[in-house]
Each structure stands twice: as structure tokens, then as C-alpha cells.
Length: 297
Image (tube, rainbow, N blue to C red; front, side, top):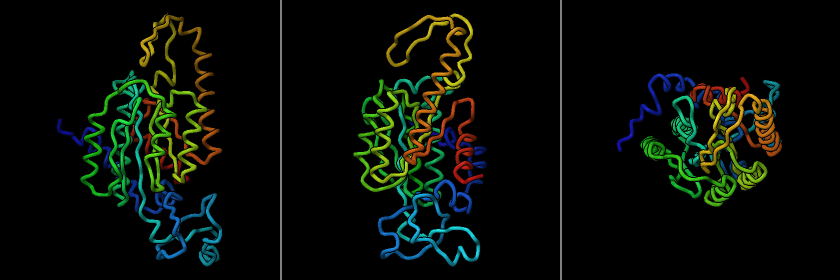
């Protein structure tokens, strides 16, 4: 089936996203700040430019002359830093097929992935794609050519909810597939044992990757707008339960808040970026909100 790129990169969305030109100063210092790290930094690489100091950087790379002029800390960047591999990892398990606003969590994830692919290639970096359910389903190695975006769109367009996934197991497999240090962006509802998933993220981070997690829930999952007797069906197992939604709403929302906070706090401790969003926010606004947060705006 031919891929209609406009389904992912609508002109009006592109017009807004294009304002986030990755050559612009605030994005270089924001979304991709600290992501272009190289083991050859300062050794035999050619000096390129500067970026803001971020926690964890080696202070020996501070440019004190710039500090004397600006009273701000900047790190010298070298030419070897300027090529980045970004791996987009999309959870295509059965639970990602849930949606109550005419848009499933999986579709929402693919829109974010498509926009990020566009932005990364626009910066002349390389982007790849991995999808999974109970197994790795598709793998596109990172490339920096614009035509590669359409390969990614083709896979995203053909990706449908599969079987129940062990998210932590799949993330461990992803870690074993990526050799070169880079950025790994995971889009998932994270509906698995949190501590196991957190350990898998720690595995990825330990391998030297910068990890960004988009935690995606449906609006109904996030807000639980039910008040009467309802029959709820598990989309992965098919199991059903009938309950008075109004009587369980408070407990559900409290448990959900604890679930999200566990991920947020534990990933923060590991210097892993966690961004929670639900489908009541349009994907382009969610992405822009994240970019602004990363840039400190």
C-alpha cells in the first residue's frame, strides 16, 4: 500500500514543526543538548562549536574564555560529535491498539515517531526505527538521507497492534541490537511490571545511550471519565470485569498516579528523560511541549 506522507506530516503540522529548526540555537542547546557525545571528543577531533554545559560533562572541556565573556558555562564541541544515530523504538503490542478519540495509542506514537524522524534528518543526523510486540517486528538501521524518512513512514503505516508484549524483555533485546552510542527514543504505554522495565531502561543507559521515553496513554486511561456500571475488557487477554466505575475511579486514579510517578522518579535518578502524555493533547503540541521543556523555555 502506498504511503501518504501527509497522513503523518500534514502541511499545517509541518509548518508549525518547521519553526523548530534544529539549526536554531535554542534547540541545539535544548532537545539535542548533551546528546552528541563522542569517545573521541578532545582527542583527535576538529573543533566545531559550543554547547551549554550540562550535568555530567567533563569540566576539562569548559571554554573559560567564553565564560569570561558571557559568565556562562559552555563546552567545546568537536567535529566528531556532530554525527548522531537516533533510534525510534515503537511499542506495537496489543494494548497500544486502545483508543477512544478516533486515535489509538499506537497511531499517536507513530505520528510522534514520524515527526521526530523528519526533525533528525533535517539536522543531517541519522534516524532508524524498531517496532515490537512480543518480538522484534521491524528494524530499519539509521540513515540520514531524506528518502529514508519515507521508508520509515512505510513501516509506520503498516504497523498494527500485535500480541501482548513483555516490554522489559523487548527493551533488553533492543539494547543488544544497537552497537553505536546514540539516542534511543521509546514510545510506549509501559504497561508491564515497572521495576523490570526500569531495569531494561537502565541497561540501555548503561550502554552509553541517551534515553528519551514518551509514555503514552489514551485520554480515557489517563482521566477515567466513567461513572456508571461498566464492562471493562483487557485488550491483551480478552478478560472482562463488570464494576461500578464511579466507586473505583478514585482508587484507579491514585494507582495510576503512583504508577507514573514511579517511572518518573526512577528514570530521573538514572538521567533518563521521561515525558508523560495522553491522547487528549494533539501529538504535534505534545512534541513541541517536550522540545520547549528540553530547551528550558
